[in-house]
Length: 407
Ligand code: SR1
Ligand code: MG
Image (cartoon, rainbow, N blue to C red):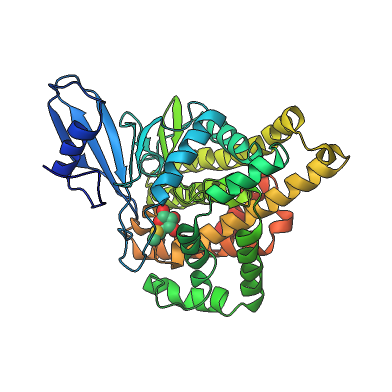
């Protein structure tokens, strides 16, 4: 019999079945359980356990001591506690938009949560050219509620500072500081650049001192601006969808950082879907229709976020000085500036860095992939450099269309 109570070890599928039987009371005694590891992320092991008698199922997510993508990343298993705790907070702030969590085990560094297998990973669904008309509404509610309601504008300042303390997440923040803010902007050995893109990266990014200076400023803002309890990795692989439902998962990178980081990541990943559709849909009418839907979604996410942010601000703020004339606009301008920068950083780092996105890597035609990458890098750079002036939905689509024309 395995000992799950004394010391941590990484579980295999058969261990997880034993874990469920001995440590949890989720299933009936006579359940006929099977387990499959279904994780496809860069960090963790995700096990789906099913009772074949009832069809009931749960997810067990275990944090390993190193990242799956590479042993180079030694990442604290405490990220599992962070994930469990933030999912509970987000469940309260944004009901129905995150999975339910049932249990956290500090020895085995795993948590037990609702199985969302009736949903699909959004990146996969978008690569299949599916549309989700409610997504913009759902994701903006999630972002406004989790970002604004955890800020000093709404929270008691001492309670907020206590939360800042419990979500200090140094290992995962270091990954972001390195992979997002640093390595893509020089010829770093850990980068993984598609050969036809190297010359472009060298000339347009690595030699550009102004761009590097701006990324340095942004890195320090990311490290020091404890504004909101952010998800920290809100790309389309961290979102489950079905037409009537959106669920945000995988908040293990959560910490108190700039609110715009989450919004920018959503927008950048919608742009990757747009570039994938542009490169892979053969039928011109279908291509334009799908790209139009994505462009509209980019506009809706940006503008609904802005509208709901202001409405929620009026309803929920507690900080007296936040009521001063001009302050809400000043605050939102800052969030939108950070949104543009974060979108730009994500577009550059997913293209040049170690952690790519399938939207781009799955483009088989070398010329089309190289074109998509150059567009991503050009837009990314503009979002960073022009962040003061990229503030509403049409700004994102304007830059996207202008850049498409060039390549
Ligand atoms: C070492 S982890 C690489 C990337 O995967 C995660 O999803 C984050 O995006 C991280 O940057
Ligand atoms: Mg993840």
